[in-house]
Image 1 (tube, one colour):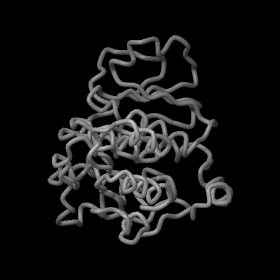
Image 2 (cartoon, rainbow, N blue to C red):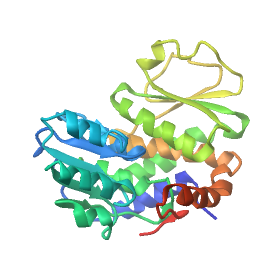
Image 3 (tube, rainbow, N blue to C red):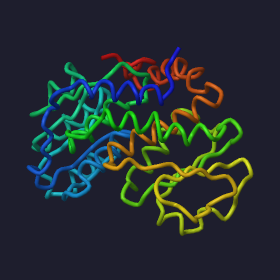
Image 4 (cartoon, rainbow, N blue to C red):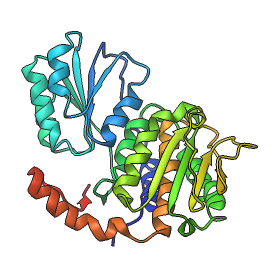
Length: 298
């Protein structure tokens, strides 16, 4: 049986709480890198390089950007596995005479054999697509002194206590509202909904400011708003719960708290992911040629 996402969040915190030192991730040394990732790897790159002069690309855009943006000095690939598109992207970068860095969680990978430099972060065994311990580790490297024990207590205490007041099974759509400073997590949370629920569960994720632009014209009695942070006095919909923010919140923290909440939704609803992931891996492997397994091993 596959664990739900909230369980993986807690296992991720347990892993990193035991790590005395993480590999150093110094991103300031880059001039104008092209940061590349697939799925939530792309959005993790957007978060890591958000305050630097970087260009961003998915696997579909790499060749075009390398050919048309002469100022690109390096190519940074964010890939938990270091496989699939990572070797293709790194080879393309080498063909264009760019320096390469791979940020990954796999000590042995085709991508690591190609990259000029690689940084390998720890991970746990988790279901395919979850990528919680991996991307959290990359973000945690920005603030490695974060009190993870206090964060775990916050999640299992204050966040869990608020979630427990509502039966998520009563709802068929969910609307997550996040503070403006974490707007780049919007797509990561949305991707997680798609991976876990497909089209069986409706969802939206917006920041406070984005909520002001006709996002709630049409509402539904089966829709639940989950609002993080100080939304006192603001009513977005008929059904709404307000969830707390950790005192030392940053992108790494907000990612885990959001994933934990989505995991609680997963726990309350039918096991769509569990019933589908093995068949998906079989289909995806035959279609893409990549070696895909329902479990990502350590």
